[in-house]
Image 1 (cartoon, rainbow, N blue to C red):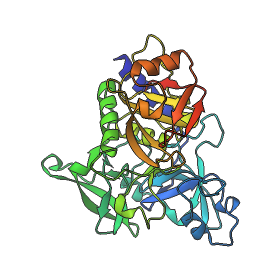
Image 2 (cartoon, one colour; image 1 turned 135 degrees about the vertical axis):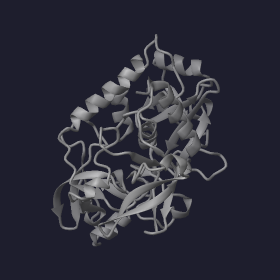
Image 3 (tube, rainbow, N blue to C red; image 1 turned 180 degrees about the horizontal axis):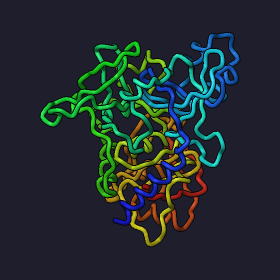
Image 4 (cartoon, rainbow, N blue to C red; image 1 turned 30 degrees about the horizontal axis):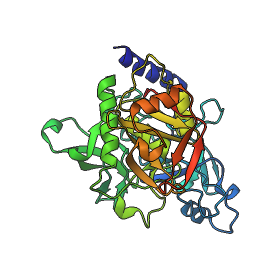
Length: 373
């Protein structure tokens, strides 16, 4: 009951911080990259705004000084439109908190054609707000990419739709959901095997769903989902080469998305904000599956305390570039078991972290263990 109370308190706190969020627009494309400033402040090439957005890279490799992608919007995500400038639009989106202590933590820019205004009528068939804020709507969330034959678009996992009707829905193999086409209300059937109804769960259920979902994304029978700096989307393997924008996850987003899927109200956009959002493990706490390992620049999930496994989205520089589940011993030198991990944390031991080629390593000042909120 105490843990459930913590979830409710987190929800109340987050709802309070977004009380001034007044959405007047929504994302009308399957995935949209969000950046911190107008894109020509990042890229100085003599290209159109659309061309500049299309060349946002996977990460900051290959001599690129920085990757401007901070996070992504998914189809139907509500936004508050603040300003139009040339071919870009400035929006407010509190679902992705980027350093909550900063004044403009939820403010981003994107290509203006990614956003459409809400009308009094359209508010009825788009999700009215961010996850878990009370609405007079039943929200359906994609667990897998979904291709809409009517629009010829593939929607990312995590995309949210309003359920069109409850009539006989429990006896049907699909959810009938609402979407828009040329501003007109339409419906499409999504298999129930590919989506779920958004709801809060008790702490134990939420933690189990969280780990199970992450494991489904690292299924060894499928190609690995790629790492994408600032990414919180996945539209499927067939779209990875020619899709603009690119889709995938970074280390913090995969945790936040999986948490929201599971009814855990986390809204952190990156590893540091996750660290600030979750409580550090105390000596009288029990380490559980789903708890987090943080060190500067990275965060991972403890997926199996008995076998000593973690799940992470790890970048390309270390030789990976995808979501994976690996033993502690493949990540850290001399850490083979959960007890080794606890000892390193409580003793504040400096840790050696392996790259894929174990001849290459990096020194870490120390790891921090966090309880999943």
